[in-house]
Length: 32
Image (tube, rainbow, N blue to C red; front, top):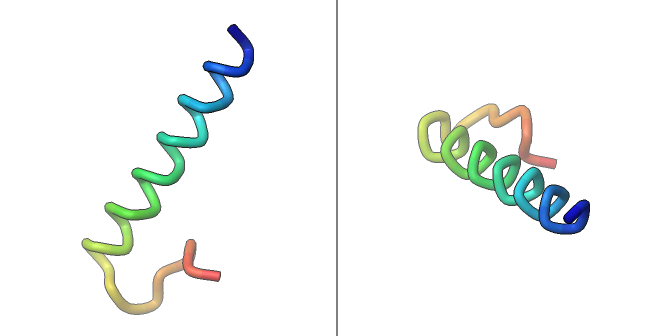
């Protein structure tokens, strides 16, 4: 389903942002 694909993509983006925040706690480009 399209909705499931959107959720999967959203979760992936969130995980990437969280991992990047953990690896680089300062000057995080995803931190708005």
